[in-house]
Length: 209
Image (cartoon, rainbow, N blue to C red; front, side, top):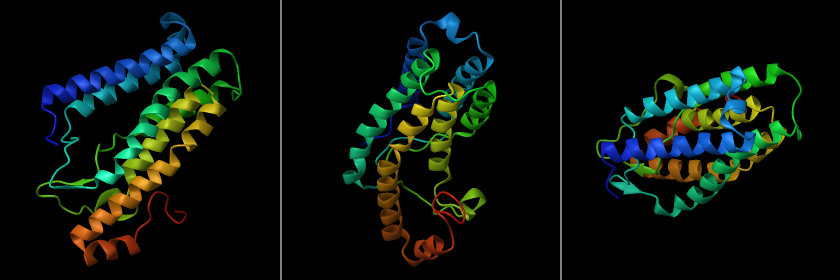
């Protein structure tokens, strides 16, 4: 699979962002009512800013030189649950279904959501791929996946949605499967160097997992 051209990545990101925000607004029941609360407006602003920033990063969805194609099944649950999580928290917030009391949850959720980071599209070895072990990778092997989970939990909390948090947890099995595939591929590429790196680091949470 060839990488998307820059314009294609920009179009894909714009459509995904618009659809995600649109589903949330639909769940709430309208744009004006949705934007009436600063935390919800902040979530929209953060989504736009992070999406625009993502358009100018070096990330891609190329299959690269080597790819674990068996891992692609995870895209279906990620796609389905992702769009459910765009709509469901706003819907339950508006109707006060399984919500967490207080605006503190909304602002905590906004802060956590902003910490979320974009993750790469395919488990693949790119041309010139180097093993990164500095920065956050010195402690955890998958900081971008941790950022993904934080982003989902934060989004749910913006809408005080306990149901949204529970639905977010459904993404853990496919995410673990993705990490298994990625680590197996990297170990086959880098050998003992990666094995040693695995032994001295944690997957997502230091001292826990």
